[in-house]
Picture (cartoon, helix red, strand yellow):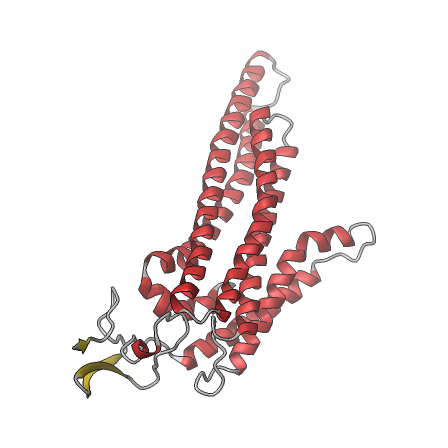
Length: 318
């Protein structure tokens, strides 16, 4: 019986290592001998212990440590800036804290996790790894969960302001936004609950069950991002239809009334409202693009989950 070295598309077997064979009894075992600086990290490798010896040599502890150090610095700066913009006004202070609460919790959790990981980057001495260290995994899971909630808060707030400030939007668009707001509040709670699966997987000794919990988290978030993307682009279409109808109405008014709004003012008004909608659409597009890298690819490509997610994890807030 021969066990071959692991090979995952799009890399060759062992990745940063050399495959060699060893005789153990009547069995020929393939072992990956890693190049200098690389190792087989148990992080995101939901394999049995006897399979780790022939798994990919993809982990560079020094590089990942520097990434987490950079993340800690950037997140600390972001946290200070978030606190700096809060106006200490008795009338608005509590409202600002309520609106920024998910962002602040997310930044604090990820900042602590990044510092904790950067100070314990040597996995041979202190294995602070996702899915292995409960405290680290708990911080990452809830930091990521509240980050997603903060994104929802931004999108919902921007859409609400866009519609509420527009007296001309149709009832259909207003109802559409209101329905999504109600759905969004449920999604926030649901997102926080689903993210707990990540640190719960740390207690699971069965690797197949642990991997299943991680994949449930990935699948749910993929579905949520599809929902948000579909809603945003549908809102953009309906909003632009209303904008076009009102613009045409104003043009007709101008052609009959010499004192009506000038053509240039109408075009300026139209472009201003288009920019508002474009800002929301671009924000959602950027957010979903990041989720494609952080969530979608690990779900569909095993190589990304096993070999690259250790490097993607500290880059979530970049």
